[in-house]
Structures are given as C-alpha cells and as structure tokens.
Image (cartoon, rainbow, N blue to C red; front, side, top):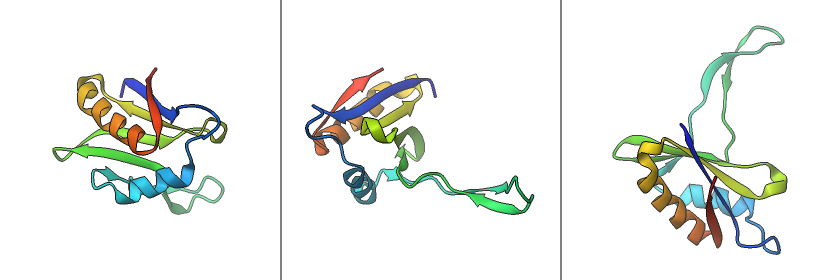
Length: 109
C-alpha cells in the first residue's frame, strides 16, 4: 500500500476516542478485523498465533481489501489509513464517512 491519510479530531479539546473507534468497527459491516496468523515464539520456538491489534480493521469492498484503518499512537488520538493509490477515490469516500461519524477530519498525508 502506498497512499496514506489520517482521521483525527477537529481540535484537541475533544480528541478522537479509542473506545468510539472500537465501537464503530463493531457496527460497520465493511470493516473487518484481520485474523491471526501462525508464528513462532522467539523465546522458546513454540508455535503461536500472532494477532493484530483489535483497533485495526480492513475496509472490504467488492470482496477485496481496499485499505487498512489502524489506531495511531496513543498521544495522537488518530486513525491511520493505509491504501493503494489506485483505490484513492473509494477509500477517501469511506474515510470521510468514518471521520464524519466520529466528529473528526480526514487529512491526507
């Protein structure tokens, strides 16, 4: 993925809240949390399941992953959007809808 955007609050007095983002993911039918994948524990070599953070979701359209939305560093109260530039129009439309629902702004990096 080679294009990026950020969803963050309009101002710092009312930051975007992590719990609101998690609740939004739970309700959205086109946002899917990634599944875990097999890996190895580096300390003992035993097999484990590597699980992505619960605040990460893939945007699925037409049966394909169009973008990844992931909560940013805690001090920034933002959602980072990572996508292929070929999907810009569709992804930014969806990102604007998310920003609107969470009383935030979409900023293209």
